[in-house]
Image (tube, rainbow, N blue to C red; front, side):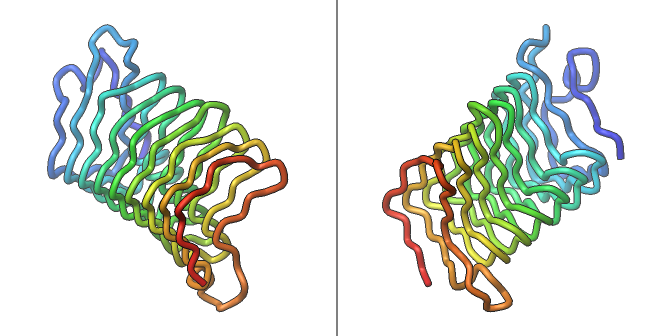
Length: 219
């Protein structure tokens, strides 16, 4: 279950295209500073039970495409980006991961579109760290034990036209010092709590910032 490193001295030189594979370990994408830059196209695989995150991009890795995969039951996140990593994550099922479905931290970027993010143990999406600013559009984020989308202090990002429903506590939480944009999302507060107890659709903590426009808050 150990992570599988991709570097200029290992598999990334020979393999840049993964299709219809079954992985029982984590995929770690390479840094763009490597001598041989690898931009893998990872699509329609089953990636599960990795000892870390299912797919992770680090150290300004960019140009990667992760599309149409089933990414489940990994020890940290389904998809993790950090340290200015920037990749396209599109049309994946990301579920039942231990920390979060999608984890963006330490100044990472990334484009996340049309993913089905559900039943991850704590949160659907966690964005944290100064300068972390993912672009998330058209994702379905549902059925999480704590929060659908959690934007921590120092983080931002653009969240547009996502459906965020059926969390156990809060649909969206924006922490003190966070500065995201939420535009045209649907957040169903009434469906956020399976027990029927009162819950919130969007919570902006004291001194939290951001732009919020055109969202549908359903009760």
